[in-house]
Image (cartoon, rainbow, N blue to C red; front, side, top):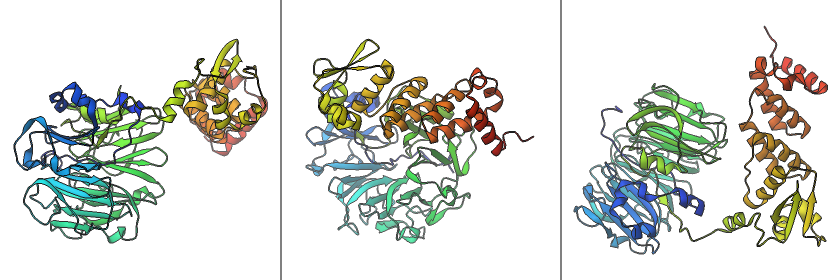
Length: 551
């Protein structure tokens, strides 16, 4: 089924609020359609969505909250009241004064848009009632959809090829449109002409996130469970079968795993857990599951991206492409990438998942509504980051290893309990520090300005010592994460020793497990030979308890 159907496209996921740092990442000019806009016009863009069977349509908003459209206008999907293509941006007058919260599109294309006030507007292709206005006539201008939604505030929208889903602020899901495979979730296969609440297993559940594949639908509820319905010919529902599902069904294979978000490709599904892990299932003929092969998978399979946790997953149902972003800012892609089949997550040079779809998806669409912040605006956090180690504004300097680090007393007192007391009656503007090295102390002060650390795993051990000494528990966790990412057979014993010394139990368990899994090599390292006697006894005792020495 996956190969025979024409390409479709959609978006899943809310607009994520952009920050000034993400502005440098997000360049709307990476989508070819934007080459029709002048540099001046591009500077004014604040939101954008690229869609269409060839990525040849775009809707964008400007700094003045005006909405413009551009492109081939297939099925009247630009909402201008006609089917004329336009090579120059035209203002979408009928939505004048409305602010867009989220937007999605199908393969007709049809558009479903929610405003910041929670209203829903639809237009474009409507042969299967996917506009939800009770007709099958194409909608050439935006139509306000209020049937069964009049007292509801819509917070998220998602489109399949020819069906539509919306999520309300009270956690209810409404669906309409094409229903040949049960993707509307009504229990039948009759098309649904107006919004209908999806009930069954979802009746008393609070839904947090929705997504649509080409002909299937997904919902994540507040308990972390995932409910699915619709087409399942490639196993994209994750139920271990290939039979269609006309009503919502819980994915039993994810029992005990708390899912935060779901994203759907053409015929495959990705979920992100609260622990930053990714699972995938469904069609895999392009390697879009990231499992290292091209075999379809009807049960959730873990995707190994890197040691760092994943904070974002991306897919859209026009493409067989998958992407993910890690906490450290690395962006990976896999699946169909510019005609190549990439079967394992590939580290890109991009800073955001949106760029993957601009540069490598076919067609070059956007997987969500893009959000661009003006670059002349600095948030409080960004301003503080800039002031770290700035001698021009500092009123305090630390002398460490003969070098100065510049800081601000008031910020240190606000951010750290230790400084609140130590700087209270201190009139000095120089503090000498001999207990810690310059890289470690500088990283600590920088953390107080930025909430993040950038250190080698070895230096992070020193920072772990400091974090323990100053009782900075969040910093302690960040150090443990950094150390975990740098563990290898050579340093595993040293890191285990540090974890024990600084009572970092999570890290101790992690290092111990690593040592057990690499026992032969680890026991031949110099670190093992020089291991503290008591620690060695404990290690051998614990290793025997977990069966490391069984024949």
